[in-house]
Amino acid sequence: MSSDRIFPREKRVVEVILILMILALGCFLSYYHHLSYEFPLHVDEWFHIAMAKQIAKLDFRDPYYGKPLRRCLEIGWHSLLALFVLLTDDVRHFTYLPSFFHALDILATFFFVDRFLGRKEAFFAALLAAIIPSHLAFGGPIFLVPINLSLIFLPISLMLAFDLVKLERNQNLFLQFLILTFLLYAHPPSAVALLAILGIYVLLLLFDRKMKKAISLILVISLSIFCSLPNYADLIASRGIAAIKFTFFY
Image (cartoon, rainbow, N blue to C red; front, side, top):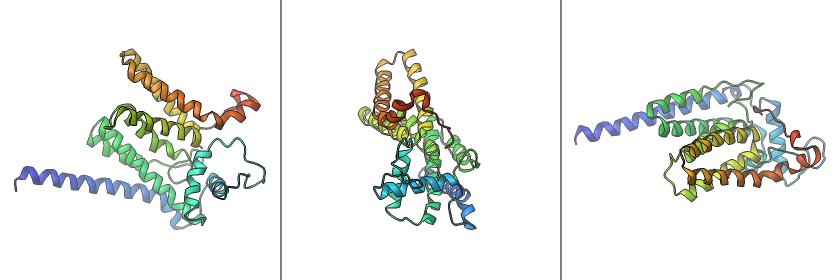
């Protein structure tokens, strides 16, 4: 067997081992606090889990006050966690989810940078994603909070927008629509960040006279915003659009 065939395969094995090591590092850093404490660490985690349990029981009342749920701008996040509640309602098992989401963060970052810049840059970006610090005031990968969705879905959405994934155009646009709409229901600040990036990209496309692609993205953005209006309609109707305020970190 020629060396031309051996070395590429050995290189792939080394790359797989390297990304697995980075994933292991990220998962360890996002879980090691629970080696000595088996419950969620932050008050926001307890709130999200409580909301998820209510949704899993189809009980749409506030878990703390017993009043009907209204103006819950992160209903998509709570519904996602509710799927896990269907598997187990033991709150201690939720401590594994931050590591799971962090692994997805790392992989999404790796694949985006790999396609956008190159393999070496992708490994470096994945390592940076793995060691992102966490803070009580800002959140981070050790907490079960919806901001962690941004590191998963923003790179994926940008891969789609920049045509870094080989898909038919309609499939590409549909996936972008699903991601943006989900973020508008799950974590509006992440959706706003994505909208800002896509908006700038649309302007660049218009400047380059790539009208068809620009119009397609404008339609996707418009449709996602329209489909997300029910999530904000009650708040807008009662207090006006200026009432929609949120902090990016949670």
